[in-house]
Image 1 (cartoon, one colour):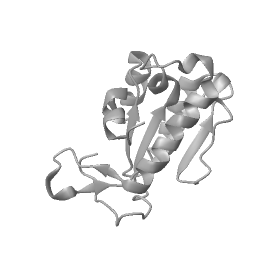
Image 2 (cartoon, helix red, strand yellow):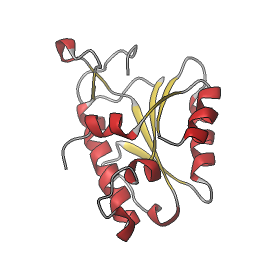
Image 3 (spheres, rainbow, N blue to C red):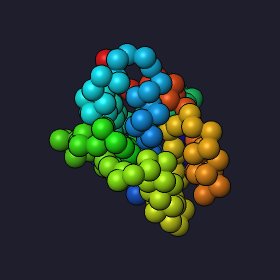
Image 4 (tube, rainbow, N blue to C red):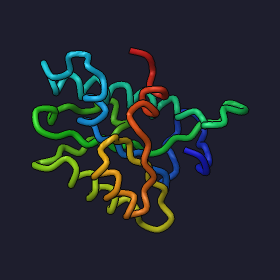
Length: 150
């Protein structure tokens, strides 16, 4: 998340920096049996995101140990709904019907003022829709590289 000023460790991120995660797309990016229990797979992702929210995201440059603490929103859908962050560090949006539309709506909501929004997805159609709103997009492998090891 270049261009965002890091907060002190453990503090919430600046209100204008957001990371929106397409849970279904990220979970589905690795064939690790997630299809057997979608809620459990989403919960595992949310738990990792909660740790990431506490530790911060390492700067791409990696120089000086700079970290960013964006607000993290994860969108779940279907059988994955019901997963939650007991730590309260990650906001979970449970899509009632269409996860992609819930992500677009979330990005639209967050893009007020000078907000910086980064969406994690590999879905080309969704990528196009959120980029039209001004959001940056990274793939699931980018996020997995920043998550704590399983």
